[in-house]
Length: 443
Ligand code: FES
Ligand code: FE
Image (cartoon, rainbow, N blue to C red; front, side):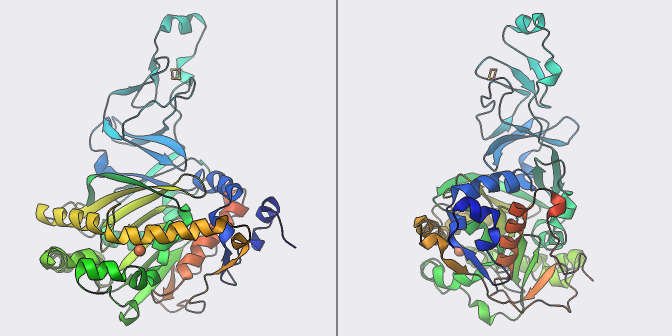
């Protein structure tokens, strides 16, 4: 029996069966599913909103979105960070139109309500009228997002007061995040601004590409690599030691002792820098992670925060409908790196993963067609295969997380779609099943 979309939502098992290694194209195009995602994923999960280096002093702010909700992220007098809806509590007008800056407050263009950086309503045009009508100013400040927390410079927020703590949400993935975000004293910073671009693709296609799809690299990016780097993309199946690790819907796949494409640029100076800092990384994080720092690898923290260590690009796939994303992308560097090296990372990332970057163009076209084909009613019902590496779970390992052998593996993609499925099916966090079977901590 063919179910209509509402029935299929009630019975998601019809749409995806991860034990069988299949999903349906429909999940990339359905408006009904998208509405559920905004509600059950983007209004509940921890979402990346800023890097602390973007908010240095009191009053520094950036504007971004959490799902389709516009928000302001602002540094407070006491050093903490608050996140507010970028929508005036009078008629809902946007109160901040700038992408970033430093301010003492926000004033709404419509009727002149003004707010301090802590979100308090502090003044209005014709304020006497409000006073005469017993208006209680203290109740009408900017609406604050439920929880904000940081991990190694990365600022996350969630709309849901019931969500697990950030630490619990990220789980053992933090052990791997440290390889990029905490490999040197002083941590990391973003350099340059935020590059924004749009793609006509579903957000999950992009997020899943970074959660663990190295398989496409050697094929999709081969011609760009030849033109740009003068040779093919490294053959992943030739790497000695590689893993796919996941936890909840997050995933990180990496090969030890390899270097990403950007490190090849800049007359190998980046490569030399990586080798220079390696001993101190080994001291800080141990040998294993010192071999991960700029490796051929990628990561997505569910739902839409991703990065590539070997290219130092960090990005958020902002959903803008079932078949559109706005991509926010930044370049991340070690704060302690020499300026020349920071500049090389920045240029390298722009040449590869930016709207004009050779690799990003390759990916964008694929992702748009993965989405558009699902517009067809019959094509949307087609099963799609995500079954690679079904039996590669590693029982015997000292590594934390759910660890799978090899990078050419769809274990992380399955975990991503499974968590997506579990969140859409669950009404509360306690209904989300714990499917993790690996260790919480490294041994
Ligand atoms: Fe902002 Fe009226 S909508 S002051
Ligand atoms: Fe790619």
